[in-house]
Structure formats: structure tokens, C-alpha cells
Image (cartoon, rainbow, N blue to C red; front, side):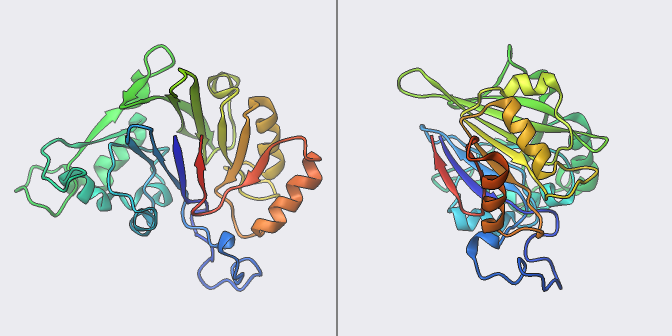
Length: 279
């Protein structure tokens, strides 16, 4: 499994427009944070995208993304959805550049799918066909679970219910078996303020955990650093990464924060745009 962190920032992105704080004016590449998204590629080439924010086009170009087999959405906020139109190329052509008639499958919960259909109604309106809009099929992922995972290529995928304030959103667990029949798993839990015990159990012991960690100060709809650390301890992943980070702390300052607050006992790092993991 190859994991590409396409974006690790908040809805504003970093630098924030008009901001002159030390992080927004930093020259460090790790402090340039586009809207949160992640691309996952399997050993047999299956390619999954989680969220398509406003920066999706530039993220896809940076990653040299040339194939998408499915898109998983966490929720319908603009910073996670509004690059959806740039899925056009992936829904009209396959890896060889040949035209395909199969729609690109989009998975999320019912409220998110409804928002997509209403907000981007032109995609689904029965108008004359052309290359000007994506060819998508919306699929409610609530039918999938541990006993009935969503199978896409070499991946088994289950939605992980989270609360983002009062909004019900999805995290995602993606698992892949390696050549030794050992399962490698990624748990992607962005944009959350509460993770239930049932959802913790779904991702407990994951190989890689990516978790919302907005800032040190509390927030009503996002996890703070301390809250994220507490969930990391409960979940017990082998490696954990903060994402959806605002401009309060630089990359180096977050590393220092984690070192001082965990004593090096937890394997947690701040993610950054362009980070690649192989497991």
C-alpha cells in the first residue's frame, strides 16, 4: 500500500489569504498545507482517492495521479468536496487513455451524497452527453461493514462513523493483504470532534492512523492536539499522523509539542503535503 498525503491543511489552506503570521510566511515546504486529502494505491495498482477539495487538481498533478478507481468522501464541506468537477478526466478515460463508459463510483453516507446531488445537480441532470461533466455514480456506503466490506481491487474498505460537531461524517479504514497474507490497514479519521467506542474498535491496532488535529486550543468541531493524542493511545496504531492542521503551529513546532507531551512513547508525527508512506 502506497499512501500519498495530497493535502494536510484546514479549510483555509496554509498560507491563509492575507495572513502574515510566522507559519503563513514560513519558507519551509512542510508549512504549505493545502486542503486535506489522501491518495491510496494498492500493490496491484488499484487507486483510491479520499476527498476532492478545491486543491484537488494541483494535488493530482503533484502526485502524477493517472487513475482513480473510486472516491471516498468523508463529508460534504467545501474543503473536502469542491474539486469534484476535476474527476471528469478519471470518469471518461481509463489508464490507457481509452474512453470508458463505466461511471466512477462515489461512496459516502446518505446526507453527503444528497448534498453532492443537490449542490452539483448539473452532473446528474439528464442533459445532452458531452465531456464537460464527470460521469459519476453515487453509492451509499452505509451497507458496508466488517462483515460486508466494500471490495475494490485488492482493498477491503469500511466506513468509520465520526462526529464533526453535530454532523455525522465518515472516516475510512482501508485494508490490503500482502504477499504473506498479512493484512495492512490505514485508518483515515479527519474532521472529527468525537470518536465513539464502536468506531475506535473498528480501527484499533491499525498499521497507520491519520487523525484530525487542528491545533492546541480546543475547537467545537475538531480535535485538539491533546484530544488527538488521547485517541491515538486508545486506538494503538503502529504509526500515527496528525492532519487537518491550522496555522497556529509550524511543522517543527508540532514535532516539538509531540516530543514534550508524549515523551517519545507514542509514534506520532505531523503529516505534510507530499509525504509518501509505503507499508
